[in-house]
Length: 209
Image (tube, rainbow, N blue to C red):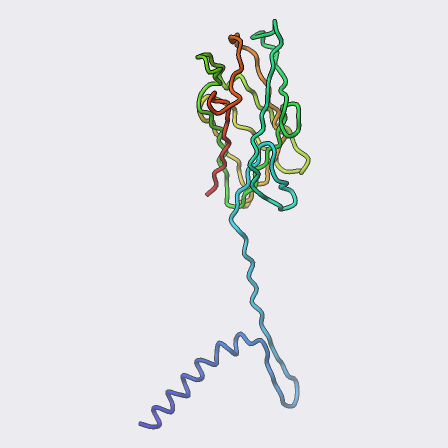
């Protein structure tokens, strides 16, 4: 009985020793002839799951300094008297790049991204008159970071969607979005939009798995 207990103790000690030998941080050997000593290090890299969207004023995104910036830009289109509804596009004023131009950027590392633009209704003057959001155009052009050009969802009175395709689950896209007013409707005098109460706000939302 004592031999059995002693044998079990030896086997248990050997089993505990095996992982330590296999993952040694230091090994000491001695003797004649060639000697070998080994040491091991485990490495681990943790990549955060992230999604970043910028339209207009926002943090830098090409240096990795991503941050939330609570600013909403205002873009104003002023139609000249006598030119209302004549089909001549109107250039905007405002935007972080001025002239009705906004910086747009989308970064993510979890696969394809769905980008939506949502309005709560047609632009209103608060007096019952409206202008549809389809009158506001968005033109995307390459930005300076060398990323894929980010296509802009066309604006409507509800929601429109674009799918941004990832490469190896990575999305790096940006653009200069130039907004214009098509000026193809004859609207009564007034200031349309400009506030959430008058349906002036478009919310862009990025969704990633």
